[in-house]
Amino acid sequence: MTKDEARELFIDYMYGGLDIDTQQKLETFIGQHSDLKDELDGLLETRQVLQQMPVENPKEQIVIMEPSSVYSSIRNWWENLIQSLSPRSGVGRFAFAVASFVFLFIITGSLTDMNLKMEGGEFSIFFGEQVPDQVGYSAAQVELLINQVQAENAALVADIVEAAQDQQESQFQLTLSSFAEYLDEQRTSDLQLIDYSLTSLEETTYNRFVQTDQVLGEIIETVSLNK
Amino acid sequence: MQNKNMEDAQLVQEFLGGNHQAFNKLIGKWQDRIHHFAYRYFANNDDAAEITQKTFIKAYQKLNTLDDAGKFGSWLYRIANNMCLDELKRVGRKRAVSLEALKSAPQTATERAADSELIRSEAVVLLHKALLQLPNEQRIVVIMKEYEGITFREIAEILDESENTIKSRLYYGLRALKKTFDSWNINKEVFSYD
Image (cartoon, rainbow over all chains, first blue to last red; front, side, top):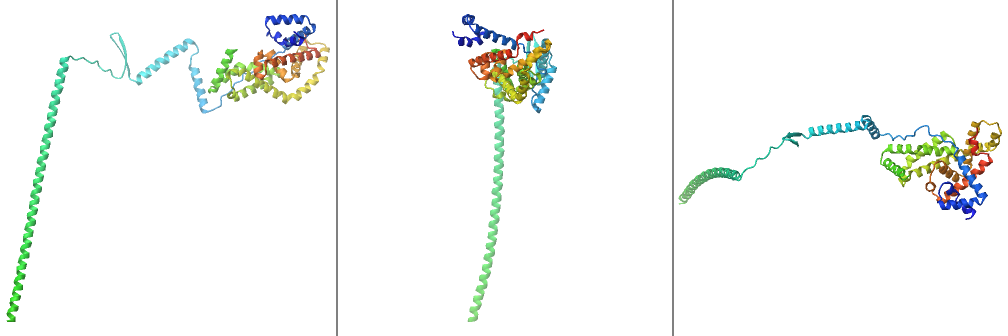
């Protein structure tokens, strides 16, 4: 070990950073060199003097205020309210929690129409009206029920068919009647047309005859005059 | 120490998540230490309080830039150290003048008939002055190691230097202080003077 190497170990030695072996070697070496010992003692004394410097604690606690905003002020108000309402002791907190749970249970029950029922040693919770228990049927009863339902269905179908048939028939009758009336009207109209045509023909024929008579008369007169 | 770092990390995460009260908890944990640290620089409670306040305001504004939430303490000391250095630069001229005026004071103070309390208080003032005489990089290491009890590794992290460099600065800082104490006749007996 050299003196410079020893000096490099002084800091670790003073602050307990050396292992036992290195520490012992250093102490042995320092014991052999008084200048190193004086230097180390001087450093140790300097540390002791430095520790004489007193220190004062801060007078006030620094607190960072949250930037003001509507949201933060509402949140602060809410947190303060919760804190003021919350009990301090553990027992109080437990009782508060139980009371909160019961309150929540009651509110939930009233909103969801919850019902509690205790019957025959059994406890049940249900929401809304309770559906009555279903009664079971035997096979014969089921068959009877089926037959009944089938008969009712058949009667119902028959009624429906009959009603449909009646309706169809009345519709048909109505249609026939309407068609007959239509034919009658058409016949009447045709007869009227024929009558009118015959009358016109008769008039036309008569007029022709008259004209013919006139023309013949004029011809005969003319012939007579020429003779 | 690891548990404390984890607590700090959790509080930092909570603050970054929007819980401002988490930062006040961090202040509660670190205010005294930062105040003591600043007090070593200036030996004045008001100056130390101002530096402490500025440190936490800066930390509050810049916490979102902290890479490792577990190293909040180291990061905070770095801010405080920079604040102290800035303040020293600002008032350095005045302190230099007062230091010059005090260079003759040790002779006068010890030669006068002693009031033990006066001597002790003057010795404390001289202690501060001796520290201020050190180069900045040595002073900060002396303060952090001797008064804050920070490990060499943490100091190295704060100052972004190697451990060997830190130890070397401490060694030369203590040697320089020894020389100053000797020239001003300051020793441990002065503080126990009756």
